[in-house]
Image (tube, rainbow, N blue to C red; front, side):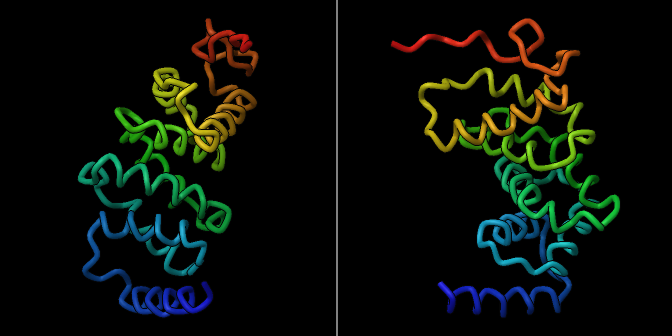
Amino acid sequence: GVPARAQLCVVLGEVFGRQLRGFSSTDKAILLWSLAKSRVMHLGLCRLIVRSLAVENLRALTRDVVSAALWGLAVAWPSLTEMNMWPAKLLQGLCAAEPWAGAPPYEVANAAWAFGQVPQAVLLPYWPALLAASHALDLPALSLHELCNLLSGVAVCSAAGGCGNAAGGCSATAGGWPAPRRFQ
């Protein structure tokens, strides 16, 4: 509620004042996710986290932390457009780690959603790996929320031509989705 958000703003102000001193890469990635999840935007701190993570070795982060950071970056992306190269550099570093590989279904779906929120030119090299992970999912077992996240990302992929089909659409022969099944 409102009192909790006020307290969070105080904490974020203190963290910003310390300029992330003493924060590990994992701490910064989780803080980025927390900012996005709480919907409390401290733009200065968000920019500082993105710039800091963009120059760090992200290979030291665990798969789930990279996945959380990817989602957090996608949520914050609209606020970061004037930051020049740093958000794109961080996005490339996070995607290069392929946090969807071996991930639980909800993280694959979240990655697809995140891909739909950011500029597609940066993502073109990473779509094939994410689509391969998506194809391995048991779609009927996904929750409605997971299916919506997955669909929203794949729809952007198809529109941007990132699915491997020169015409821009997804197809089974082009590495896209298999033919639809009839439900009775």
